[in-house]
Image (cartoon, rainbow, N blue to C red; front, side, top):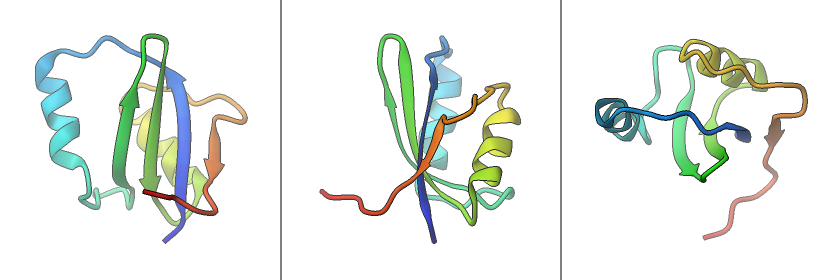
Length: 81
């Protein structure tokens, strides 16, 4: 399954939203996206996810109210530990 890295502006999240995201990590969601890792910085958040294509990653974020702009998703060719 292809892996994608996306980035977007960091949004303030209540603790229950953080817990929900943590519970989804590593689990395929109904929309076909499997969130792998979320890296949260002061200004930007970076997400790694598995999906059949980048469009599914866009839709996954849109369902959470997050708009990914042009160039915000990159298909990864490798991930190293």
